[in-house]
Image (tube, rainbow, N blue to C red):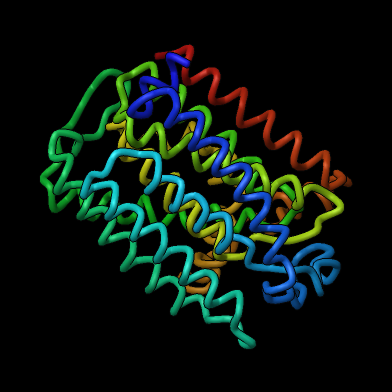
Length: 318
């Protein structure tokens, strides 16, 4: 109870927030499952056609439950409200893509993500001018606010797109998001992180649980871009609030490698005609499933274990 008391206004608010997100999340996913758009399958993903016909876009439900839980159980602050709006925008952009009969092209999605990330980075710097530095191996470099905004915008954009690209195996993206946020939260508790952000992190994890219950293989529904893009943005916000944006790489390394290596690979080939990783299928979860013969369950569990081990090493090294 002391932990809840430290994160929320009082223990009752903490317990209420957790119960709200879990219970209302479960009820909402059950009630609105048939209202979600249906997945059309993916042409280039390994076993991508197997997802055809499943309810997609469950992210709109779990993110709305999360945001409502935050509004009801976390003390009001303007900074928090602006983050809620940004997460909502990230979710809605993904949901509109999920609902579209013709998927949005990557440039349109990238431009929308960039605008959301720029607004989020500007909000962060406005309310946290003392956290605009880079830290590594005990050294800290203070950056000019404008430079930090650009740096943070790029980091948030990477987080959104890496998380989105990792959403290709039942339970993978949600599980890795929970593992990542758990260790960011542990780091934050140990290092005096903003209690409001820690409370949000807890409610986000609990909001994901009802979805994971249904997304574990055999999958009953998919979160779509509505979930994965909002997850990525929220992870980026929590990393910014640690005061060290470079923590993204160890604490989110599996999400980053799984999702972003493919973006790097395609971008180098398309724009610079540089072809690397020819023998590695991306996203990496497809490489391990197709080339290494891992089952979906093995992929989820092993990726989660790898992230847990790396995160533990980071915490022990503090």
